[in-house]
Length: 390
Image (tube, rainbow, N blue to C red):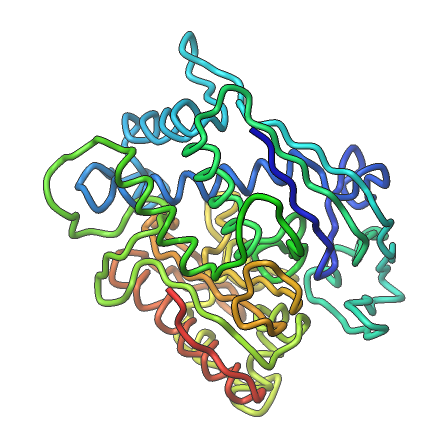
């Protein structure tokens, strides 16, 4: 089976290759990057079904509050790789991905660069702004980015059942709607507009999520009792709640891409929410900004943990009005919140002194709630609107 999507780069994209800050000007959008975000979302969907059936067993980690049991990790990899055809590295049972991705350049994008001396980034129609992620990356080296252009994404499935092929493409459509590619991909950078498809009809991302979950519920046979009453040990797409929805998606209209991205920069949040870039916003006051991703450290201050990195699952993406899965036809953003317990057991807050923060389920939920309420306040004070769509 075969399918095609037309793509354009909606927000500045920086996907490195053999030199991490230099673009691959042959393809710009690298197939390996697409496969990576595709697999990540496939695991989150599979994990959500297993979690609701009591099969997503967790254990206390040495450095991480909750992590999946090794048998669960293998089962998720098996379903994602072998059943869904996205590739499985299971020793003697290994199998290559049955999906092949080709990206063709139909029209070259704009190529820009950011340096320590020149930090303004083109983000569409001649508009320029600073993006916090590029500011940090350009402290040590020039960073290239791409914007716009026209691309054809061709996907073929070797020996893939038609229902599995459709399910796979629906998961990919969700992935490329709610996540970007490359640097800052969870903070509104590297978003791709899918402007046409010869396979999937125009629809909303909320409906896509429902269709993916319904297909997986029929496909996955594992049953281990009732719903679990503790946090999932990994990000999952589930309808379950523990004091808050563990997975939710919101539509944000009225904010541009830089405004969404720079929410993750404390002075910008504080300027909007409390009126001063030096003020204490709620995430800072409650020492909960670690939920926006670790490490969050600069010049020896911030949040430090023994784990090398924990990317946030408080994620934003931005799309133009031509995106195939924007049911409203308006340009705007998406906020996705996936609550899970795979955070460090201990985080050090360093400023003029140091303070140890012990992490448990209640503190994880509290941090996500604080982040959401502050984001909601931020959007409204900037003149935008936010509404739950899943």
